[in-house]
Length: 291
Image (cartoon, rainbow, N blue to C red):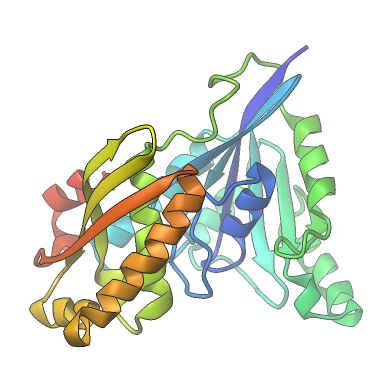
């Protein structure tokens, strides 16, 4: 018997969804930073065993959209609620409800198995945990509750094994050697965007999109040309920095991570362009894969 299914991870921003999926897959597929709203797309990570295939889905954190990009991000979350075989709802110690009541109602009325993961327990204590478990058991009575630390690995194997038990009988959906549904250029863009999230403050990281225009791979080296899109000229200047120092730092750190990711030498060219109000432009959002 072979089992396979879609396991979709949802929750508020910055609760550890990407950390959990990367821990399951064993690869860094999703951006992990301390900043909220780092995941913009729905990213699949595929875990294969001899008799199972787990198709994990990392989704953007649930928010009330303020502009068109965020509305598109929430569409990814809605689709994750619709096609899951197992639903993982992640919260962290001290958290209360989802920011969107409609999403919360869908979770509590779900007909599929729901695993509620109480994450970041390493940042709390036993006394708080003893109040949180019954609180969430009452809020989401249809869920199995697991207390975990996705970053520390505590409780993660138990959750993984339970998911495998819950997967329906099915042939695999993807080839057994496939790791994700995203193309290589997507991960180039995400690695560069992660460096911008780390090194720039305020609105800058959320006004940026990356477009890898060229990707040429030979036996020994991959040559890439990527453009950092910003919304305003002032943002372009901040990204580049004094005498290009800030942009150079992003390029150097991105290249090192790309070489680790692809396992070969990388030559990366970075440019910065202004693409006015791209976050509210449906045509531009479609171009970047948000619609």
